[in-house]
Image (cartoon, rainbow, N blue to C red; front, side, top):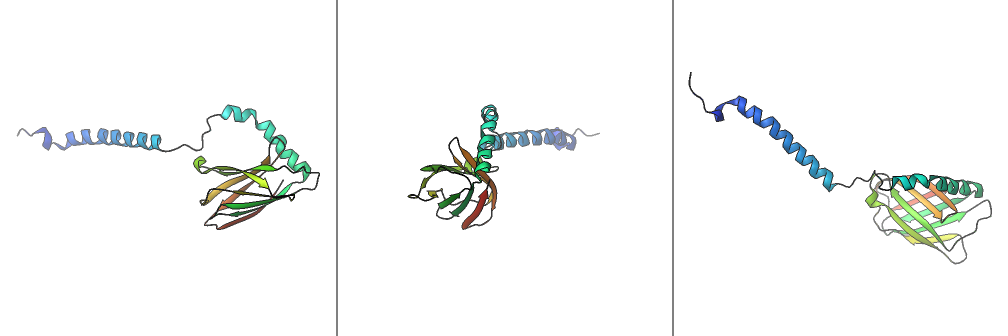
Length: 166
């Protein structure tokens, strides 16, 4: 029997190859985890859990008022117009809050303040364009009063028109 060098023995290479492959895969996984934002996890989940009753009350207030909003967003320029109407007595504020929330990419979320147009029920504002395609949640609210919320799916949209009801 000849004395073979360990370099020429295939069993040695198999013993080296598979653990090395596991190490490279583990390092790659760690690099991906560190460089990717985990948008589904909220840092202050406990505080958000405590505030859920306030949110439910705001939704109920919008239902009691029979509140509706017509939303017109130019996805390319970011200009937007929101027209409010209600069956009940709605006290119009000078400013309302508009949130565009992406379901999985929190880095794409936008919050803006809409200003009332003179004495009308219309509010104007701007979002940072372009609005990427995906699944979104739109929230329109007046601080500590009411909130309207609706889901939206965009796909190559230049204009977004929607009617939100409570």
